[in-house]
Amino acid sequence: MTASRILVLNSGSSSLKYQLLALGGDGGGNGNAARLATGLVERIGEETSRLVHEPLTTGGGRRERDGRVADHDAALEAVADELAADGLGLDAPELAAIGHRVVHGGLRFTEPTLIDDAVLTEIERLVPVAPLHNPANITGIRTAQRLRPDLPQVAVFDTAFHATMPESAARYAIDVRTADEHRVRRYGFHGTSHAYVSRKAAELLGRDPSETNLIVLHLGNGASASAVRGGRCVDTSMGLTPLEGLVMGTRSGDVDPAVVFHLHRVAGMDADAVDELLNKRSGLVGLCGDNDMREIDRRIGEGDEAARLAFDIYIHRLRKYLGAYYAVLGRVDAVVFTAGVGENAAPVREAAVAGLEGLGLAVDKDLNAVRGHEPRLISPEGARVAVAVVPTDEELEIAEQTYTLVSAR
Image 1 (cartoon, rainbow, N blue to C red):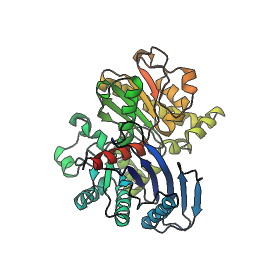
Image 2 (image 1 turned 90 degrees about the vertical axis):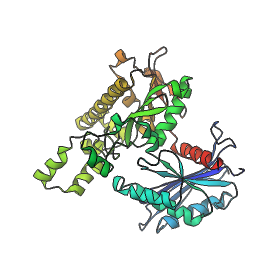
Image 3 (image 1 turned 45 degrees about the vertical axis):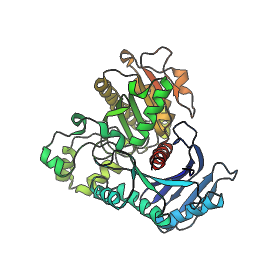
Image 4 (image 1 turned 60 degrees about the horizontal axis):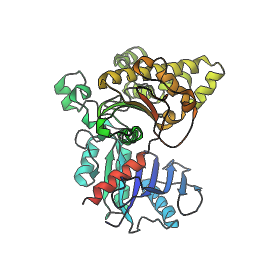
């Protein structure tokens, strides 16, 4: 196959993120991918929308334009126009496929999948367990299909990497018949990031992924942890939805399920109100009014007690999962930080492992303070368990999985 470009689309309810990448003839697995363009259309359907486009290899500068973008069809057409202006149009023969981020693949989709009518129908059937994400992903797929019906469209699922969890980790302890009927189980999310980062971390350690045990901490506005044994996920912190687990920017993470019943009885809150509370008005923003860790750190420096408590709660939950996954794995080769907070917030990394020297965990203060875009170790030389920072690249992972699939056809 001579075509080597992959357009990666990440469709939100009112946004469309995209990247165009060129991969090598071997499927891009040897690290020779080149990013050609990247961009974002936001506030789709609102009165004033915004498109930001940045060509990365043509010498052109970043371009921005405002103006109403009525729907995702119009958004993708605008993206196609911007790419065409750089000689990278969607009609170029070099374009091999379009890769779509799809949040929920349920139990059926555990690998990148060529999209046809049956696949799209199944993704629609999963909307009840991913009501905030799958509908937007479906919209992006349909839009791309209309623009390029002749081109392979591939779905890469956030849940896929976690499909290797054993039943003992994936099952909730509720009535089995009810759980099966309504597909209530732990699926996990951020899987594309966890897959990419765990593989890159093994490379950093000079080990084969099949021989490496890792705890991966994806810490962004959404946050999740995973226990990875031999390149396969054996546990993860998110569950049926992305609400379970760590304290996040606006999500509560773990709470007693009876909180929902309590709020219904004593506060008169219905299901939608509690859903909004736990997903949008909780986490760091609920605790201190900010979900930006940089701002929280600044406030702590000024003696703000609410910010300090929010940080301490965030770290307490993170350390609980670190300890739990250490026990799940039995042997840990590295703890790996990634995503916006994990890659950039040195105080979070330091606090997360402070006092865990007995488990072989520590960070070197000077190494931890270094900022960079490459995978790096931040643990002291000779540490029993490595601590690493590995920048994630979900778009590259989607592009590589997409290219590998369509190249094999």
